[in-house]
Image: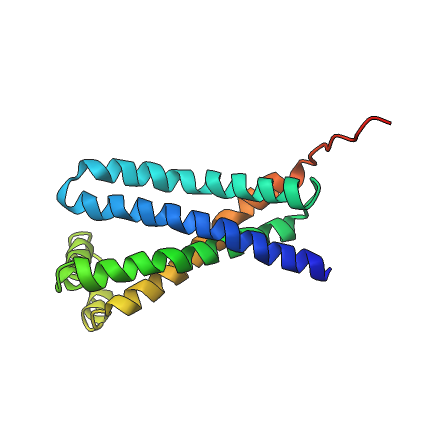
Length: 177
């Protein structure tokens, strides 16, 4: 049991590092899409690939470390931890962007755009008033919020991945006697 938890942590950290670097590269395309909208499509293609990459890492963990058998909850925990460690890595990229690359009013401008979009869609005025009273978050707050968002996505997106990976037992080849 202790070996299983150690293995879970080791492999989720390793694959989380790889996924976090992938997210960092993906985020660079998001940054570039501000000045060149064509990069936005690359960013969204990379984004849509994330659950498939998580599936690949979970299946690889199951096959190489667990000899082809994994329970739903074990696969789900692995996925959540995978997203958690990836979120920690990409949060560094987020912080650098908000702190050093983006213009000082970038976050405030994004908030104003969101409020204007809600006004155009005739959202309840009490909601708009409460949103307008919010203070603009700092770069570190934005990076931390990104961590929480990615963990939430990991919790949700790891459910179907865990269902698929745990459903199929991988056949291991036995050496001939």
